[in-house]
Length: 264
Image (cartoon, rainbow, N blue to C red):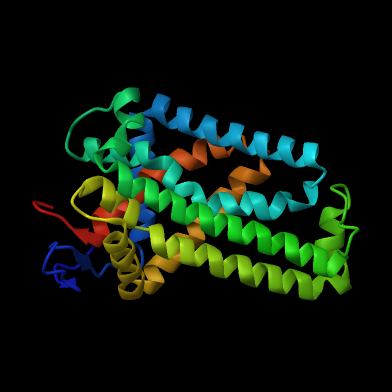
């Protein structure tokens, strides 16, 4: 359970970060599952949208003849995923208060702090675009004008000895950008939703502080997000319809555990 003492009080906003224990992420997943069971239609709606987005990405890459970028582009989903689940945060927030949530209330959640949530979305999109551009550059550097075909993508990038530097550098760069995105958003988007008086810079600063104060518990949380998201992707996005809402609901409980809130 989270300790009572808090770290890094912000005198002007009263935003205080709690220090939590290592096993907390498992509790967040359990709470996310309970929220999903309480809001199955809403959860599956968001999950289905995520799966549909995955299929559209595949179709777009096939149409553009760039299917070799499927892995980095789907990896970019981890970067922008948090901004796509604001409605799930709202449903979890309202359920925590003992209230239900309609589809309209979930979809309109961003209206609680529209400009700042939109700016957060822009920041995450810029990170995703940077990752995709870097991935394309790496493919060009290692494969020249003949990137691997989709049929040979796995063999040429994971099994060929000559591809080891490409794999190490690509994984390293992608991992760094993904962790930066995670550190930026782990509590910032729920904070912007919960506290409309907070701006995006303050939210990002407090999010980085939460990671600094609770590095190992949040490293575990980041790893769980990656594992569950990859499991959803490799099932041809079918699993994503269930994984995304559970992670979205759970992310609200991560915020609730990490940030001291009035009356909680």
